[in-house]
Amino acid sequence: MNQMFLHGWGIARQALGVSLVALALCALDAGPVFSAELLQEGPVDGLKSENPAVRRRTATDLGKSKSPDALPRLAALVRDPDAEVRLAVLRGIASLRELAGVPSMVVFMADSMSRLRSEAIDGVVEIYTRRDRPRASKFLSIFSDGRDKPEPMVLTPVDLQVYRSLAGLLKDSDPDVRESAAEAIGILGGTEVAVDLLGALGDVTTNVRAAAVTALVKVGTSADGEALSPLIGDPSSSVRRRAIAGLGRLRVAEAAAGLRRLFGTSPDSTDGILALSALAQLALPEDRPLFQREALQPEASRRRAGIEGLARLGDTGNEARFKRAFQREKNEEVRAAYAFAIFLFGDRPFIDTVVMGLGGSRDLFRQSRAYVEEFGNRALPEVLDYLREPDARIRAGLCDALANVGVVDALSAIEPLVRDRDQQVAASAARAVAILRRQR
Image (cartoon, rainbow, N blue to C red; front, side, top):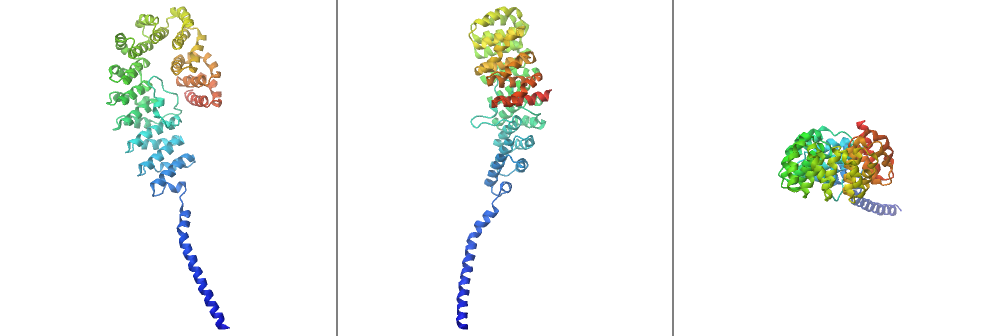
């Protein structure tokens, strides 16, 4: 009996041993899987991973998460040794749109990689303007048209260190970085570093010179604008034409003689028409005979410039003739010019044609918006009625124009549009409210 028991216990013990060995082997096989699951890195741990791909992916996800602790976590990696990680961190911080992220952009603007310096310029503009960068086009270029005044998009004062960093990048080794830096100074209203743009006017790269001209026109003074005069002979048509237009916009009276010569040499060329338009913006009394002649020209662009020049000179003796011509005019841009002039002469209902132009073609929109901005406070109170127009382009355009020239008395009329059913109108109204409240 005992022998049978001992024999049975031996068999059982042997079976138990086999089972334990099998379990141990299974545990060994399962160990790595269990360990990987246990140590799988979450968003925060992922930033500390030794694997750059993990850090990069985690930084991207953290930026998208909009988590309250995202910014400080990302900011800790602004000097990560891997360039692609730094790029992911940069884009993540920019997407958060927090002013606290600006110091990180300043660090990136000094990065050893030109691509990151360029992206940092985009990033700081994205933060201050709260605008998404489109994928299909150059981000800064959508705000940097040489024919337009700056958009009223900067909602808070720009840190002086940002301007200084951008000014330093005007001498960067990469021409694309230099161009972007000039564009950003114009977009962000860098009046404090306008003098630095003067040096960029002589850059060897055409696009940099063109961007510097545009920026200087946006942030410079009439005295700064004198530096544009030599550029009306620039070999690049882009630089040359921006400079000609800029001389008028900055009211550089000292450039008048050169503009007259340019127009006289080729009055029907693009450069000649721009020179005439610049003279019309200067509106010097000695050019009254020139404007009288041009206002009768069959060519629409020349006729428009002549009308504008007489309007700014306050030549009310033309009012009756302009009203008759307005009724017969078929060219919409010339009709808008007549309305602009007649309004300035004192017949206020003609503001209707000017404002309604904001709902027209792209060129008519530009023209009408420029007129509204030139009217400024003189457009009140009539212009406020048009904030209720059915056309969303008119409502949004007025918000931008009135904010751009600081018509603070329009604030109460614009505030309700922050809740407008149209997304673009609501966004324009929100920017306008922020800007006008700051100026109040």
